[in-house]
Length: 237
Image (cartoon, rainbow, N blue to C red; front, side):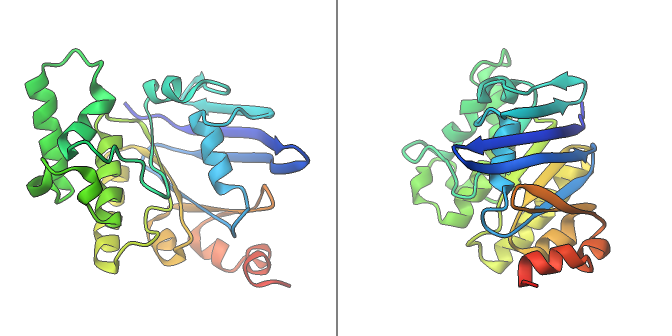
């Protein structure tokens, strides 16, 4: 089952700093919505509010027809929201197989079925030969693939990716792009944060540009590339 995601009037403050100032965004099933902006624009804060790490001060988050504003991260995850992080948060002293089994521990499916799914996911990510290794033995790029595989294990409806290409070898980056395209083609809603504008422009159906906690432009790749406010935010007046 797929689900849209809608953010309405989202505000998040940290003391006297307003990190999000009334953000409005909508992403539909099968769509990759790229989110760009300079450091401090509010991109990761937005993602943290959607997935429950932060509680917004104002505004609403809707997943499909369900409001998720203020829910805890595990409650949001149960509704079908998957998330990766800029720095992979793998279980370093656990095998790759065990890393993938963690998010499905409470499933009623037989262990053999879950293990087969985990092995299939590792095969998809080209990690199957390392399935019994500790995840700390992987390279940084491989850990990003492992985290992506773990996120997909519970079959989320919405996928949020925070800087998946940061520090990744170009060959692996191309492979990750193929995986993200496959995720969207399967009907999932994808929110993609990245400073790699080449990859963002290649993948995104639409792009939203943030600056100082506000959406300053939203539209097609061509519209964003030529938008004066986006050019000024990145390059200066």
